[in-house]
Amino acid sequence: MSMDQLEAHFRRISHLSHVSAIMQWDEAVMMPHAAGSERAAALATLGVVIHEHLTAPQLPELIDAAEQADKSGELDAHSSANLREIRRIVRRASALPSQLVESLSHAQLRCEQAWRTQREANDWQGFAPLLREVVLRKREAAGALSGVLGVSAYDALLDEYEPFFTSAQIDGLFAQLRAFLPSLIDQVIEYQRTRPFLTPRGPFPKASQEQLGRLLMAAVGFDAQHGRLDVSHHPFCGGVPSDVRVTTRYDKSDFMSGLMGVLHETGHAKYEQNLPRPLREQPVGQARGMSMHEGQSLFQEMQVSRGREFLSFAAPHIAQAFPDASAAQPEAFGVNNLVRLFTRVARTKIRVNADEVTYPCHIILRYGIERKLIDGKLNVADIPEAWDAGMRELLNISTGSDCKDGCMQDVHWAAGAFGYFPTYTLGALTAAQLFAAAERELPNLREQLATGQFEPVNDFLRRKVWSVASLYEPQALLEHATGEPLNPKYFEAHLRKRYLNGTR
Image 1 (cartoon, helix red, strand yellow):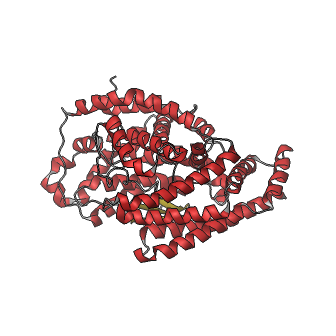
Image 2 (cartoon, rainbow, N blue to C red):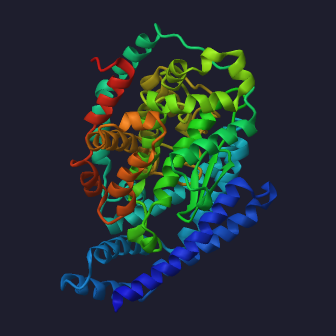
Image 3 (cartoon, rainbow, N blue to C red):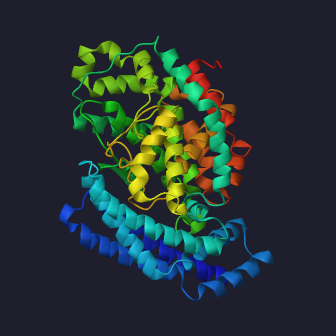
């Protein structure tokens, strides 16, 4: 049967992608620096092999035959959805010649490897030529995809991370955020001036931070038998569902950023670990786009882990992890102070350290710049100036010549991930909507979180999102989980409740 042949073919692709995922994790975490060029070549070759499998000459005929079987009712719901995803993946892959796939992979890996040292050195002049090469190749890919998919160049790249979504939809959602965020940020900062807090004084040893992270990861449901925690330049969650690789970075003077990085990536990891086992080697068994994926990480970090209930549970563990610091400043490690620490709102240059109120401004900035880059309306050389102007407009901060903590702070563009940034804020909206739905179904949810009972909320996500994988299109999945399409009202209500006690 044609569908059986397609599934066997994509099972082989899954195995190749498994190898690629672990090699990429190793390249970012364990690989010796001098091995970079050879690893880039190997990964580029593997990428071409995977691309050749995705564009194999027999696939169109098999897909046509499977579609006829689907029309005649021979396929069940999961097979039909798998066919939909296979068709979409093959269509995208067939639009790109192998030579472009290889050259793009080389450009991205060279740029990402250079970013790890050039960012630290604030070396924009050295980094810009490498980024320019990535942008040129991504424009070429976007143009090829655009012609096949019948969408704009930027939307063709967005489709890789958030299928069936458009920049027009993002523009509408972001316009709603821009309508209330600037005044809300001002209100919250003023409101918090009367609520002082103590800053815990370190040092906070890396080993202690790592031990605390592992403890809380396990508590919220991370399966350490099928995953691990390591350190990288930029926190991420990689690997495959049976072998999830979480990374973070530690600051000996501040345990909060490393801990929340761990919990954020654990949200991603739990999604991967709970995808349906029988379907994991098929497109239908994979996570449903990056907005839903970021929704899981922000559900864990923002909705749960920065809330008073979770911090009530975590406070004794945090104090125990740093006995010298907590003995010297016991009030700093109390629940009330931790809540104020973990919900402190401030304008900052760094996206990954930003609070959830100002965070969308960081994404709106990046979204605007990357659209112009792909559309050819902005050159790479002009990014620092555009970045500084956007930061001043959105957050009243100037980055000036500080590219390290300005336009070079993220790895995404170096890695060619144009179209990814919007999914962070779409994920924040998704997380707020999911948490509201979870509270409706679990009236005692907050009490459960305060006492370390995380299985009820995990079970909600497992039933509504994780086990469903890619059976539905993204917005249909959100409707399945919450009863309605993406609605920013839940995000706004959450921010006002947490940061202004519900006041307008």
